[in-house]
Image 1 (tube, helix red, strand yellow):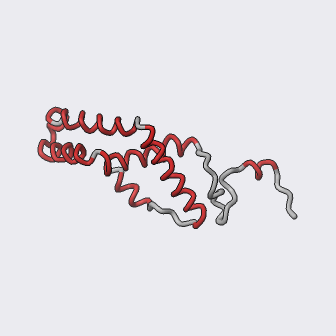
Image 2 (tube, helix red, strand yellow):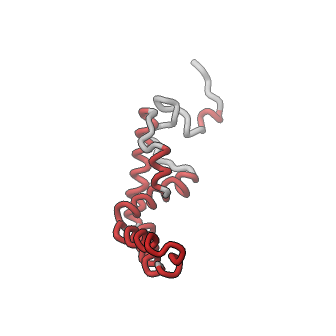
Image 3 (cartoon, one colour):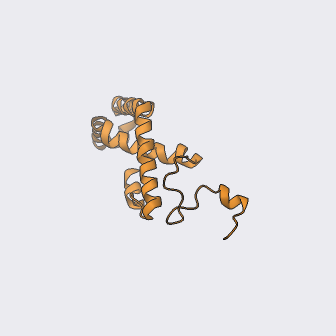
Length: 125
């Protein structure tokens, strides 16, 4: 039997079937709280909640080119208001947190990421 050191016992991202962390661990690191979950919120808000506002702003930008900052203020304001509404919605935040925890848990169980790097890069544009 191997005796674990104190640092090995307190490292939460070790263990699990693929040594990727405990799949049932629900604790979040700072980067997960401040970066990864907000990214999911942005992606979902743009693709599920504020679709009309995104389309209107995109069309306005395509039509006005260089005058976009002046011509598309109303569409930009509507888009920002919609996104802010969803960012501040505690139910939506909790849904996105649960989605992230489920994806992370699945990854830790299987070792296979659900969202590829390519799909995340596409969602940023």
